[in-house]
Image 1 (spheres, rainbow, N blue to C red):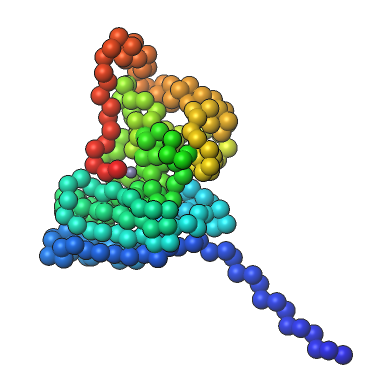
Image 2 (image 1 turned 30 degrees about the vertical axis):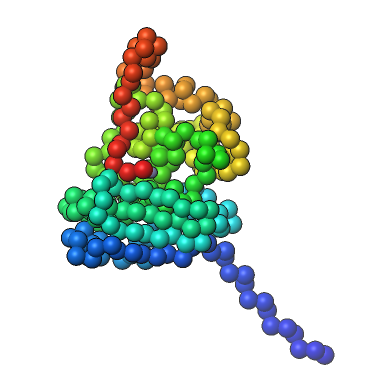
Amino acid sequence: MPPTPPPRPPTPPPEWPYPKLNLRIEDLAHPGAALFLDNVNPLAALRAAVLASFEWLYAKPELAPTNVQSILLVLRPMDGVAYTFGSHTEKEIHFSLDHIVNSTSRARDEILGVLVHEVVHCYQHNARGTAPGGLIEGIADFVRLHAKLGPPHWSRTPSPTDKWDAGYQTTAFFLAWIDARPHTKPGTVRALNAAMSDAEWEDALFVKLAGKPVKELWKEYKRELGVEDEEESKDKEDEGFTLVRSYNPVYI
Ligand SMILES: [Zn+2]
């Protein structure tokens, strides 16, 4: 009688498709470089940012995109905070050493928060480039918010003239509210991101995924927060007034 074959080892759970992570520091003598290295472990910080993006946008390793082969983080003196660019496979994040110095008192949280925001841009879908820019920025800060790395100056309350896609924390808090609505399936933001993977943007996606037109949701949200209705400002806009959008100018 042939010997009984040994039991098969259990299939290991699928793992998140981490890319190769690289770091370049363009001025090691800059005080921001020392602050960065004193406050975070570069590999752990980048991996945490990748994981936050995966978990909040894709939930399961099988659903995570596998196209990103590498992310290069470049720390250098520059204006602004950070930006991300790259090809389908290679991404590059530039992060300002001056901004790190300006955030000395909360350097660690600021570094980790900005990394989450920028890494989301490496992984989120954008409806073939047709999604509203404010939604793209709002989703990046939605993930930052859920990673508990929102800076203390962020305010949930939008200004009366803000639109739903004002971007950054304004849109991030709105998306978080939609995700938490009793009649919305949890994971609306994930579903929104998935719907943007291979189709062009349409506002009607909100009806499909959150049950109502986005403008109605925005009105309801503002009402709940006790923010004055935008109708008045809309009238002014119709009369030819130009509204100043409250875009957060610090990072893109
Ligand atoms: Zn951004």
